[in-house]
Length: 126
Image (cartoon, rainbow, N blue to C red; front, side, top):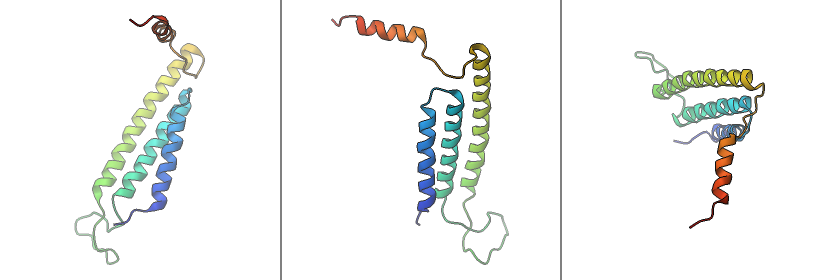
């Protein structure tokens, strides 16, 4: 079995772009990064499921293809799409709440975390 190199390259580029967007400080770029990574994983699952085959329906006859396609990969992708939609709705709700409270979309450092980090650097080691 040989994998489709084009689809693997597309999945790699989508994952790279998604990770780059996830490292940004604005919520909408993080959301776009999540969406890109999830789509890349869907393409990867589809690529790894094997070559095209006959429809996975009992009693269906296809004279062109010898074997059935794997229905598990299709089910996994549909489940991943539903989960991605739920995560996207949650992130959008968080972004809306953050914008209402702070009128900014950029995620800032927590002042208490910064203070603790600075205090740990100032204390002498024993």
